[in-house]
View 1 (cartoon, rainbow, N blue to C red):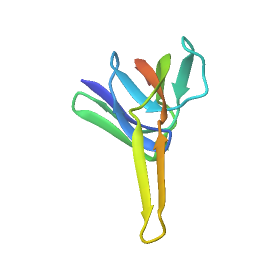
View 2: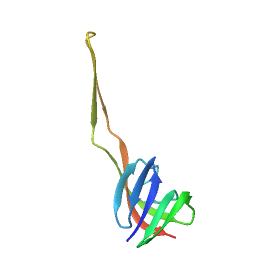
View 3: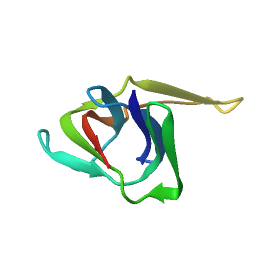
Length: 104
């Protein structure tokens, strides 16, 4: 089993080839291939390499499948005794990527 831990969009994600992941918005068009260079850990069967902080010889190739939005989060603020009520919503922009290869 081959997997890697990649830092992308401020999060650390465990990725495997052939699987897709929803990450924070990446500025790339659908169909583009992006290289993820910030590889923190690489594991292949029982051997693994740990970077301090990153591995320079490992590259993860990913394909941008599509852009989407997350579920809507609703915030509701109430100020007591002031008749002040504010309802706000937020939908985070996400990008779905497919991990194609993990190259040494």
